[in-house]
Length: 345
Image (tube, rainbow, N blue to C red; front, side, top):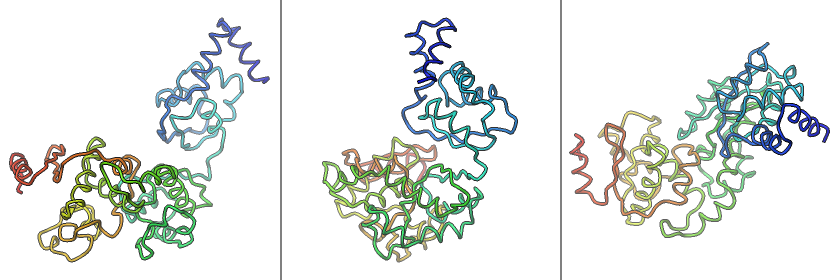
């Protein structure tokens, strides 16, 4: 209450009317720049002045009003309390939350960025690069059987799934206590998956819609994991997943080479002709239905694209050399489009 009274006095002294001043204060201090989550890694150098920190925050769109930052820092005497280090901030944080975070020492925090759409063993390389732990330590933590029992959304995973958490280690940027290590990271990834693929969405998945049958969480994760490997743009994700649902309904093999590449243990190059004959359930050219498990760890956009796919008649798609994805309803048009772009059918 005393802080609010101080604010009212200060903005009055600065020449604002009380009502207009409070509106400005709410805009610049209490309102975040964005309503959606946009994590930003922010660095503060040792000895850096509050004014420079304010400039950097404003440049990175982490605060709405540069003058509001200066005033708030002056009123709260926050400047001397700012810590040097690397901070995980977010554009959905307001100025008060930003300042509070910058006052917290981060010497024992490690920021780990996990990229969307990569299999577990490639995520492990991201972890090792961050310095939190080795790839082997992360892979071991991701095999802890106790974790499977702790998260209800893992109930639809086959008991023999290997790796057991593939598809569910949510890609994002995480701030991890160094003492918590890779185990804390795995738990945070599972927590985030549960937040994104919420209980409400899990309930929706269990109900059939006009564009997909009732599905398990596992089936949606498998489909989304393929979308991540196949779709170049967010706008294409829904259509790509609609192709999968249409093919499954028609009993046509999915024909997704990314699933075979997963079995081969690589992301590129495309499978060779002999590899296309490989007898594995991950070869979706020769096996109908879904592959045995996810082939990557999908992000939110891919999951939502498969929870609510658009209604289409598409059965085929390809991406041309310019990165544009084309969709077709029949093989004749598909082959003609391929040839028009200098590709063989």
